Amino acid sequence: MKVGASGEPAAGADGRIDIVYKPGGKVYRAGVRNLAPDPDPKTLPDSEVAPAPGVPAEKGRAPVPSDAIIVYTDGACSGNPGPAGLGVVILDGGKRRELSEYLGTGTNNIAELMAIVRALEEVPRDRTVVLHADSSYALGLLGKGWKAKANQEIVERMRKRARDFRDLRRVKVDGHAGVAENERADELARTAIVKRG
Image (cartoon, rainbow, N blue to C red):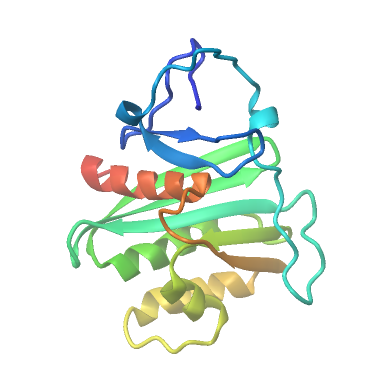
C-alpha cells in the first residue's frame, strides 16, 4: 500500500490508495475502508515495489530509449456536455510534472483531446515521447487517420503539434483498469472540475 512520510495511507482525492500484491506487480486502486492492517508491516522503497519502468517497443519500431519522456493524459466531464477538465502526468527521468486544468463547459471528447494537446505543448519535441491515453477516439484521430466530424479545430491543433515531434509514440491503455498514472491523470481531470480551476 502506498504510504506517506509517516506511514499513513496515502489516499488520493478519490479516497483510494495504490496497492500491489507483490513487489513489481500490477498496481491496483483500493478504497481505504476495504483494507485491513498488515500483521507484519514493512516499508519498502518505491523502487522495490513499483512495476519495472519502461515501455515495450511497438511492432516494427526501435525499442523505447531509456531517456524517453512518458506521458499519461485523461479528460473528464460531469455530464456530457457539462463541466470538463483535463489531467496530465509527465515523467522525465526522476522528474514529475502534473497538470490539472478546468476547461469550462465541454464534452468528454473535447476534454480527452485537450488533455493530449496540453501534454504535447509541455514536452520537448526533440526527444522520444510515449503518450498514453485511454481514449480510442483521441488516439484514432491522432494517429490512425480518422476523420474528425466534430471538434475539428482542436483536432487540427493536436495534429499540428504532433507533427513537430521527432519521435512520438502512442499507447492505448484501458481506463479504470489499475494503471496507476492513468488513474492519476483521471483524478487530476476530475479534481479540476470540482475546483473549477
